[in-house]
Length: 227
Image 1 (tube, rainbow, N blue to C red):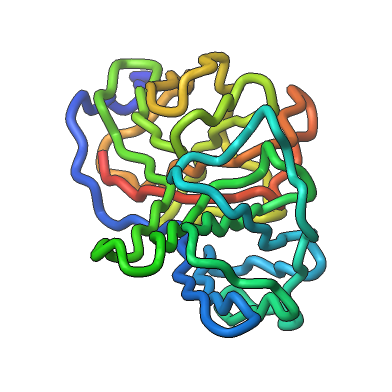
Image 2 (image 1 turned 180 degrees about the vertical axis):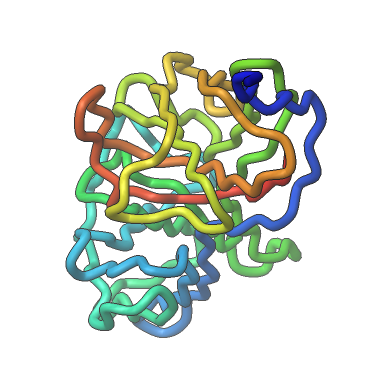
């Protein structure tokens, strides 16, 4: 009797769907108002998500300066919602608003820049992204993009690959790998035998890497693909 052989591994993929974390914000009077959209299953209150902001002329998070204003926690434990940052002395200069999927500056994944009053510019949001670059017999290479200046290696970012059409904040991925590159935009390879004709979901986690039990509460974006 012939022994069954492993299924042939596909070397091409079709991206099926994507999802990300995003925010929009505006400033007026004495408040900054923001709306957030995060990954399905996120519990922003439980997982320590927060807003913060800086008054500055640039769209880049001042990573070296750190968080100088309050961490504003959302009031709703749902993936989508809104937050008002009240009692802010709103000036005419620009503001950068940021959203973190964890409790530290290294967990910031989405931003929204509110330009200087009268500058004639539009509000500029940034959301993280993940896409399939290429696949090989025993690995998949993924391109990621984070806010400019972010250092994923310093803050323990990582990527996991789940079997099926969804990622999870709790169920462990089938394969995973740390992001060892300090660049905000680069690629990461995840080793693992992918099977032909299967659905997979790759997810980017902005913090909490551990080779035995990484923190999945920092899920920032994902991409689904079929082999």
